[in-house]
Length: 268
Image (cartoon, rainbow, N blue to C red; front, side):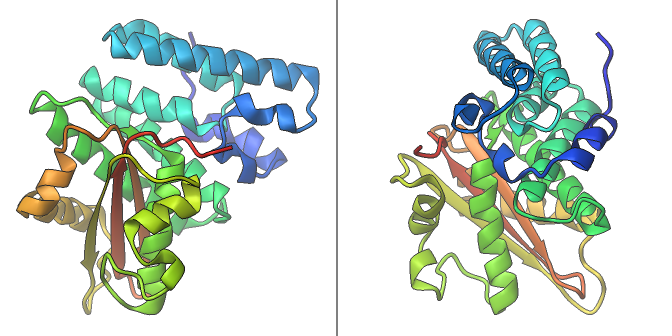
């Protein structure tokens, strides 16, 4: 099967559609009128993703990879197959391919939230978030723990908190906005239900120099791992999914939120 780089595959689709609705699994697209061929492609991609998830759980990684590539060829601008493909590649020990799929996933998440496709900061943010996803799963895999599946919805929770901290110039798990006061309330705002398991890591970096670089993001991850409470969240056995959100100021300061949870399907 021909492998198409994610930026190439997404190009034509991004020129034709907006991605606000693509944070949702296309299985739910029956609510939207669509051409039969599009609907068929979405249904087939859903089926392929389900099979890939089952195969990955059984560590049948090659079959899972093949099914995910088929799903992506059918619906290039759908994020969930890229999230699972990133974890599959990482389990296969393929860092470049894993980070490429994580980056595509985060790129789509940012577009779904209204970011401009041509923005260099958008690309750099997706790269930085992908690096954190890779580092987090690397910590888990080297200790025999299952990797976390990136969630586009959980990334929305994380990114909103990072942006709020940047815009209101604070750094805390506690928001000054009552509706966003705690990480539980922030989760409910997006998912419409109480989380079964939830944790949150925060990191911030700034200074006189432009701080937002991949080297500094890497260092931020190491600082989190060197902190026992943050390390515990990263290595918690009960979590299954992760959302990474980075906000960057004009001067290059950045805020990181890592949201960890299980059962990350929004209530319909």
